Amino acid sequence: MKKADIPSVLSEALDVLRKGGVILYPTDTIWGIGCDATDPDAVRRVYGIKRRPDAKSLVLLASDLDMVARYIQKIPDIAIDLVDVNDKPMTIIYPGAVCTKAPAEGEPAVKDRWHLAYNTVAEDGSVGIRIPMMDFCKELVRRLGRPLVSTSANISGEPSPKAFADIPEEIRSAVDYVVAPQLERESTGLASQIIKLGLDGEVEIIRR
Image (cartoon, rainbow, N blue to C red):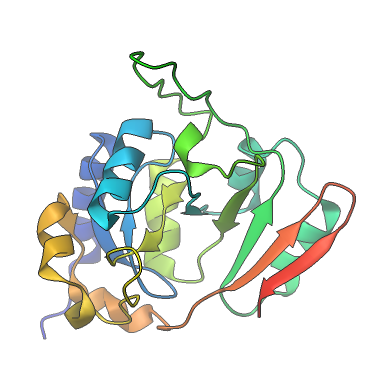
């Protein structure tokens, strides 16, 4: 299989994301559907593609803790330690997401690059964010300059795709851009750890 032209792939994916589009891409865990996490209309499309209720929250990718800090009211101290010692994919659920308000019925949703879209956040105001260990993902998010939605590329309730070949055609044809499948060699094919943190140091391990 021909090697992917990574600079071109990054440029093309970014162009789609900045225009409010949705991409299909390999992450450090499995294949994901992604969009700008500050764009509520793009996020709504992701829920529609997955046929998933938008009452649920989504996992986001950030390039580093500095980016996380821009979208969380206060990062618990333990999060810094967890990120420092982490050696495999880990999603941290942070309290106090900085997000836009859900629009009133009939009103347009607001996009603000300094606030997460309201429909990425759980009802309790928390949000799951992972700093990817895959160089491509980290660079994509860094260049975008804000978090990227990273939800599994499957119809809700169906198995998550560990490889490009596992992704249903319905998903492939619904997105605006498909990242070169050759890049999946950096993916682990494994689900990330999930750890939920509280503002007062509470730690809940949801998935090891």
